[in-house]
Length: 86
Image (cartoon, rainbow, N blue to C red; front, side, top):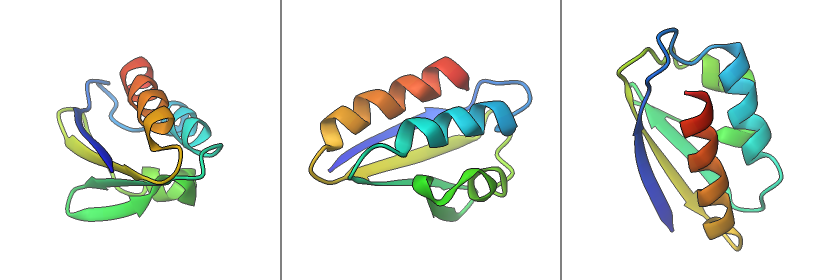
């Protein structure tokens, strides 16, 4: 299992453009990828509306868990997607 914590830096929080980029980065992987924020947990492959529905604002800490056969590659890709977009 791979895990990381990320603090949202985007002044607008998680909005459509970065949410779409995060979902797009997660979709190709076989591993289960979960995001926890604001007391709720979603599967990142669940879609953009699930992610945007969490109402994540700037300064919010999110916790990502990745588990599966390609978890190391998924970890590197998802972490980079957060750094590039949020």
